[in-house]
Amino acid sequence: MKKIMTSIMALLLLLPLVFTFNSIGETIAEAADNPEEVTIYLHKRIFRDLRWKNNKELENWEYQNDGLQIVGEQLTEQDNTLLENSLPLNGAMFDIYDATPWYKDVKEKGQLPNGVKVTSQKDFVDYVATLSRKEAIKMAEESKLTKVNAQAIVSHKTEMPDGRTLEGIATFPNLPIKSGNEDAAYLILETGLTEKKDLNVDIEKLGRPLLISLPISVNGENLSHIHLYPKNVGYVRDPYFFKFGKDGNKDLGPIAGAKFAIYREENGKKLYLDMSDVNDLKNKWVESENPLYDDRVNIFESDKDGLVNTGARFLPSGTFYFEELQSAEGFIIGNNEKRIKIEVPESWYDADGNYLPVLIDGQPMLENPDGEVPEKAMEEKTPRVYNSKTTTTTTTTTTDSSTPTDSSTPAETPQDSTPTTSSTTTGTSRGRLPQTLGELVDTVATTARRMLPRTNEGKAAFSLVGVILAGGAVFLWKKKNDKDDK
Image (cartoon, rainbow, N blue to C red; front, side, top):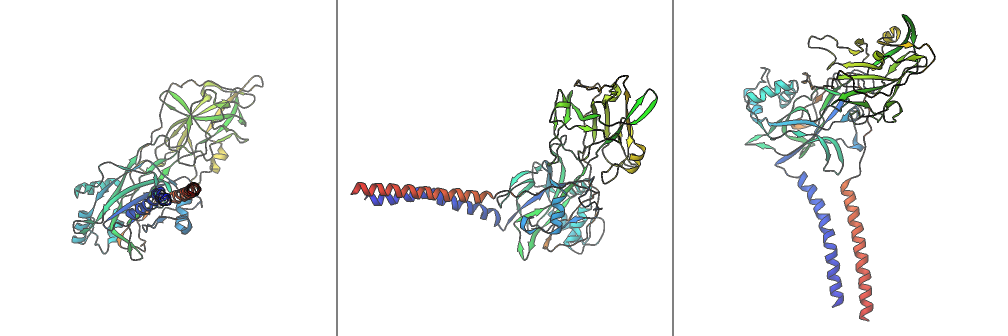
């Protein structure tokens, strides 16, 4: 009798573990195998417009979406290009519309809204990709398209079906493949960002409109999980200036050794640019009572040419300040030199195509697309800021962290996307995916792609340990009971 009870207890101990294995497998299967619905994953990425890793023009570069997820062991050349030069962007907001009526109308008329004849689904997908965001919204309203989501879908850190956790994912779940008797089509529009002030880039160009016509097939099989890789073009500038000395009206030339920090003002407080590595598109800003001796604060020092260069520390649009914290030996920090204004415009050019320079202390700053200080600027040593020579050899240090009188908080305003074209076809059949063509200038935002442990593998490992422990417990209990029977 005791042996029978022992066997029953062993089975009861193992039942929760059996259910754990089954539930893991069933969750994955249910998420992947519903033939009536699809889930769209937008892997939102951003490119800095200032530099590009390979230092070449990429205005016509495009990512060929095929609906498949980029996997570490199966990277193509375009996958590497995308991953090495962009970073995932959390906080991008999207609206999705049922575009089936719009698409049906185009098919029935045989022509696009601009009057061009339609020969394939791809024609319509490519046409939508050339629209600005405002144009797409206007056409959606005129066609009385219905929003699928009541609230904006936001890209964020997400656990994927394969167990990896990825940043910058906007998920559109349970989208019907059919709308009535028609194959469904969906229009996805980017509407803005949830939080912008801490980004070290501006979203100069929102992602262009995306039209997806279902079903999407790869190698003869319809995809139930569709992966898209749209991107933003990020706008940044990296300011510099030259530090010069003077003695009365005499120009003493460039001086080395002056030390500066960059700060911005927010709610009456000075926030200094932090030393933290920039690997997530954000600058970190900190309060400090003594920034010169604060290990957190990024310090910039004038070199032998007097150049104070921010290097790879980029700034978005807005108003910032260089604060001189320590003068070069033999010079003093005057009231005018202590606080040097940086004015970063909202874009490279105004509405009329006129170049908009960064202003340093009111002086225009020359720039190269590759981010290097231009040769002309090095020759002319401009823009310049002067320190006066002291009567005795001293070094002036400032510790005053009082709030300056005039205040300006950086403003970052997303701009509408500019029409682009795409003519390359993909290997997918029936349904069509948009090509995420970006308007890119030389950009260099290199990132390492981190492969995280697979969550399900961890669960399985813990479950196996549970089986071993439970089995050991049953064996010891059975052995003890056998001795008692004897």
